[in-house]
Amino acid sequence: MLAGASDVSTHVGRSFSGLRERLRDATAAEHRDLDAQLTSFDLTTMSGYRRFLQASAGALLPLEAALVRAGVARMFPDWPVRSRSAAIAADLARLGSAAQSTVPVQPLTRSGVFGTMYVLEGSRLGAKFLLRTVADAADPRIGEATTYLAHGAGQRLWQSFLATLASEQACDEDEAIESACAAFAAFEQAADRA
Image (cartoon, rainbow, N blue to C red; front, top):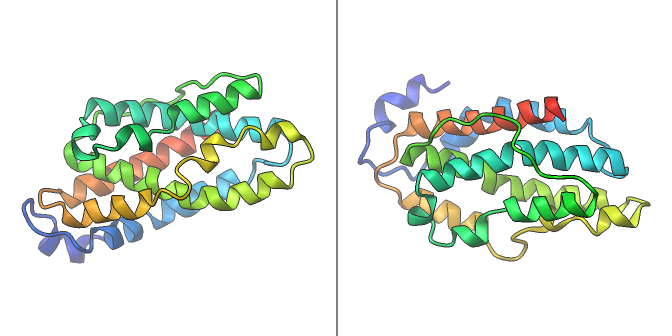
């Protein structure tokens, strides 16, 4: 899939205006697989929603920790606004559970930060749809534990991420794609363990 693009667009120092599209195309299968796996969680029941949040936390916590270790705040000064670890921990606490890291995550390079952020920031788009499902839950406790799913609503975080990605001059495309695939895999592994 990447062979045709790699000879022209993987060199460090070039403009990557199309990196978003290459990330989307290169991770399409992983994205579909994760979406299919997450449909097994019934978000309208307490046990299903709790398992979904536990699975999400299992990957989110170590991914965000890896981002912090890689210096994400230097690249995205609004990182404290973007981080969702506290939000998911608060939701799980409301449901009588704890947020725990359940999968290992490799250290990230600068380019790896962009790939990982692509997955995490993009997941906010899907969260909007999940909120609609959660709204149908009969148990009011579920509706009170949506800080994670609603995090960043109205803040244009996806758009500002894309602007930063498009302006990045020193991104290694292969490393970014590899990290994005690894982030999807972390969520899949965490869902398997939930």
